[in-house]
Length: 119
Image (cartoon, one colour):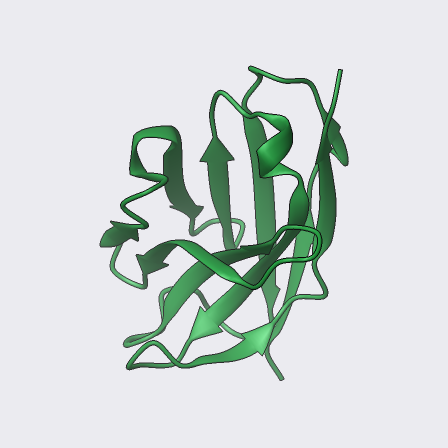
């Protein structure tokens, strides 16, 4: 059974770079056809799709976040990482990693990790 677990700093200061890692267990991130995604939910708002990296390293980004976002994978650790630069309090959210099983269907989710941007 595939499981995803996010790890992050919890608290980040404005202008810093946020780094989040998702560790995948029970399956390989290089398994064909799967994509690995980051989604966030600010307080009181809906889900926002941020970025995805496919099993073969192909990446895609939300246009609104592309200039500040980088997604990468470490196949040796079966992990993928999101970096979000120049954070502001508006980046405060619960951040989720999820598996895209195809056609933008996110079928497995991590439990989420709270990130607060504050000085």
